[in-house]
Structure formats: C-alpha cells, structure tokens
Length: 123
Image (tube, rainbow, N blue to C red):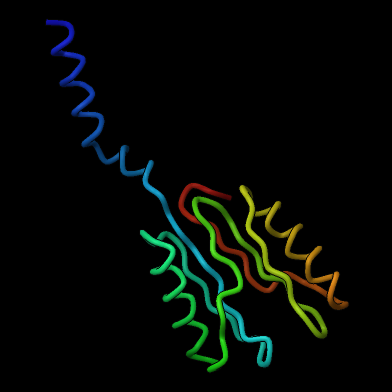
C-alpha cells in the first residue's frame, strides 16, 4: 500500500507545473561586427530555435549577423569595443559579463557590455 502511494505521489509531482521548471532553456546572441547590431533570444526549447530567433532579431537591423554565443540554462553577455567584441556564457550573469569583457579586451579597447541575457531561473 505504501509503495502504491509513493508511485502515485511521484506521478502527481512529475505532472505538476513545478516539474516543468526542470526543462532545458536555450538562449543565443547574434551580432553584426560591421554595424554593431545585435539580437538575442532566451527560454527556447532548442539551440536551433534560440539561434534562429537571435539571428532574426539581429537581421532586422543588419544583414551580416552571426550567432556569437549560445547557452543552455545559463546567462550570456556580449561586450563591444572600438574595433572588436567578445561574447561568453556563464552560470551567472556576472560570470558571463566578466568573460565577455575579458575576451573583448584581448582584441580591442573601450569594451562595455552591450547585451546581457539569461534563461529562466538564472541571474
């Protein structure tokens, strides 16, 4: 009897809305080095969907956009400077920002964060 109750409880928990929080969420940032336009996406069910959305949003402003970072259940950042950029993802927004700025600074000067984005549940 106790075993049947445990199974029923597991089924109820698995079907509850809270269980959906455990699903994967993808995001991406697209960027045009020529125009500095960017687009982003978050909370998509696949990497492909996140990249397509980020590219679509970026291409509203520039035709030469490319995906510069994608991420899963995490955060990402795009840093731009005088003549280059850096992009990164991390388990927190602060980690993504730090790495994007570091990568940007290895190519150019005057780097600042141009875009920050996290998937659901991340900050």
